[in-house]
Image (cartoon, rainbow, N blue to C red; front, side):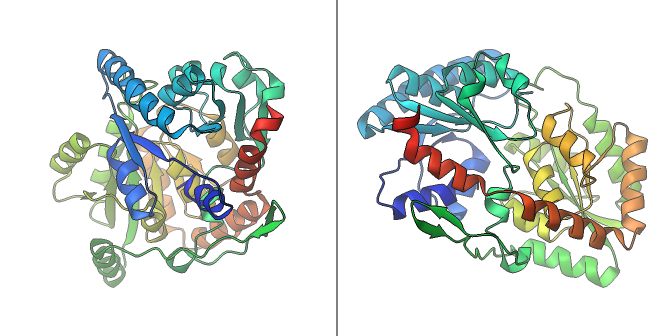
Length: 369
């Protein structure tokens, strides 16, 4: 979602681009859905520390061979420990994107090796400097990461005006992307409309990520309470991260919520929902910038969430009672959706295009860093 527009622009300009990913359910399927050709190297290591270590070591070898054969001048990654290590080992200039300094393990393994770090402006320099990177190596863009694709999305998601961006003397006009709605989602939308019910989309947390894998998650009790409170009065959709998470949640909420088994473009899911409840980061920001009434129940606090709270695009719930109360209020507030959409449109329009910043940084990397 983030890199595809940049890849298209670079290819159109005559550059050679190699796109890689580890074997990871959502990443691989979303790449296929969005027409991004990727080479797979390694896989996700799961939740256990040793399994993460072993998978990382194996992936470094596989990715190293792949990158050595391609011979790039610049490497770009979204704070990938293996990508950072391979680029460093092969002497390749690397640009690192990161909007999550709270993911400390990943930051410690990637930020010190970056020739340049690019991040949203809402994250202060001090959040990165503690990982060993100097301020002069950090570029901030005035946008949250979902702006990269929301400024290009239209059709079912809703048309937006975006400013043309000049890249190497050419205008990079945001593309109009057709986002098909899956059959199951159409049926749920029609059913909800006929019964007068709101659709609530719940996005679960990255339970196997290093920054929360060792924590006892309060979000489980919170979602349990929400499902119990509104399953009769609203249609609940649950979007999981992992296959085993899907099976567990489907069993836990059988008959009360629809657990999405296929990988679907998140923008489509959000566009067809009325309320979003997020235990992660990216889709919470995406839903907020799309103007959906949004509640964050993320297990950690982070800078992007603070910004969204401060500008009124997101509400925060810290308990089961707090979540059910907030969502219940959103369900009955008739003017909330229009108000949120107006505020979100204004804020999104004020943001710059991260893709413009990315492409410029890539093209200038060899002479700038």
